[in-house]
Amino acid sequence: LSRVTPLGFVVLGFAFATTIGFSVWFVGQVLRRLRAGEDQLVRMGRSLALSEKLASIGTLAAGVSHEINNPVGVIHNKVQVLRYRLQDGDEPEKLLAELDVVEKHARRIGQITAGLLTFSRETPFELRAVDVAQLVREAADLVRVPFRTAQVELHSGVGPSCRVRGSANHLLQVLINILLNAK
Image (cartoon, rainbow, N blue to C red):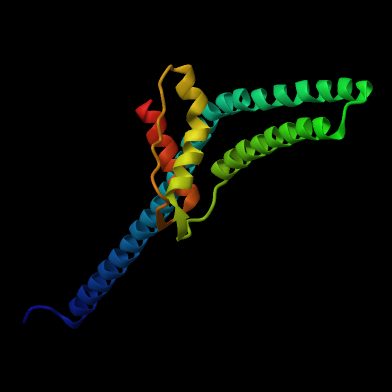
C-alpha cells in the first residue's frame, strides 16, 4: 500500500465501482430475463391446460352430439304424432301429454349443452360451496357416451350430498379427466 499513489487509489476505486456497477446491472438483466421466462412459463401452463380442456371437449363433443340426437329424435317423432292427433281431433289431455314429453327432452338437451358450456369456459378460480354429488352426476353425464362406445359400464354410486369449498368448473374438469383416464 505504501507504493500505491493517489492516482492508483482512484483507479482502484474506479475499477471497484465499475465492477460493482456491472455486477448490479448483470444481476438485474438476469432477474428480468428470469421474470420474463417465468411469465412465459405461466402463460404456457395456462395454454396447455386450455389445450387439454379443448381436447377433452373434442372427445366429449362426439358423445354429446350422440346424446343430443336421442332427445332430438324423440322430439321430432312427438311433433309428427301431435300433427296427426291434431288432424284427428284428439282430446287436449292426450296432446298435452305428448307436449310434456317434448318439453322433458328439450330440457334434457338444455342440460347437456349447459354442462358442456360450463365445462368449456375458462373461469377464474373461486372457492365456493360445491355439491360434489351434483358434480359427479354432471361428469358422468358428459362422459357417458365415450364409456358406452368403449363398452365400459359407468356406475357413479353417488351417496348423499356432500358440500366442499372449491371451484365447481375446475373440480368438474378434474372429475372428467379422472373418468376418461379410468375408461
